[in-house]
Length: 431
Image (cartoon, rainbow, N blue to C red):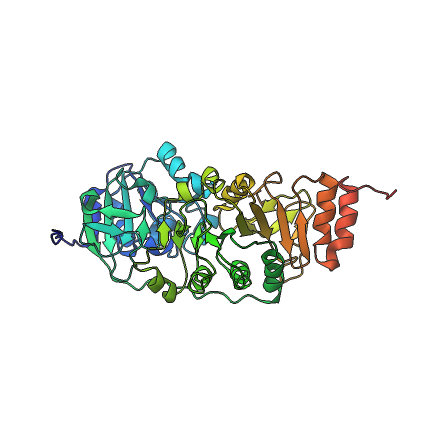
């Protein structure tokens, strides 16, 4: 017989009792980030010494992220979000370059957490909270570090490896704030043109990894005629939900975890939040499982689609910066690029419109100064614009350059060809 689980709900400020000098605190990304607890930590920062909060992709900027408490509380990010981008550019928070799969290992080695804070669903009859929309890097520490949790009645209960037992919790507070919901962005003509090219390459029974945004949504919208698709993805979106409900995605041909839609976090509309709740088909797993290239490579026919902002004629992608300034982080792009190479029948696609809205080519001789390489030339297999697919794998430097110029916007092809010849990437004369 299962007994009712009783616990005391504390004010958010009670988290301060568990903070010690020099402590590293971890918080999950997006909807699982606990707003009341983070604000309480910020409000109590004057009493700290050398405390660091590690938090990817924050949506809300707080004073500690803006450098308000030097020597007392600082913010370290691993993927810039709306709440940290400006702060990073102003030098008030730190950014650690790292592939998403390696965040838990990086934390263990360089910043061992002493406390985890997270939003969770209501407790169940077995004494477990769920991290709901997330597992990410924080779930990797369940059972290893103490958790202070923020219960939110609006957080969906999900399944996988993101459950925290009451015995692993040092404190509980409540904050029934609405979930942050994002309506799916509407793809335009260019996104649909790119999606059509990719959809033609995706066979029935393939397993998919896609990001979130216009391009991934466009690709998903073009797969309605497919059958028996699977999901093993970093981010789960409304587009995935729609194809599951339509019977297109069923996971029946997956190699790993058949019939389960594997992800490490979800972001989207309120409809998606409702769909996730008590949905046994979704498996929320820690990022060092989902994004591990060795795990990805065990999945057959893994087709990975990720966006970039710039590709040079060597085939290097800069996906973290815009105009040479950091905008985000590496995320899982390189994780899945590597994993696809090991997947039998797998293929990777890096996608981008051929030019910016201002007419600047996204296919360039060399990357914009200040733009680091996110996914290097030896990993990328295919680059896609609305003008076609450039397959780079197994091709020479000159063949790569020619293939990339061929999918650049027509307005830039002549210039790119001239620059490539001057740089020795293309022969100066044709024999």
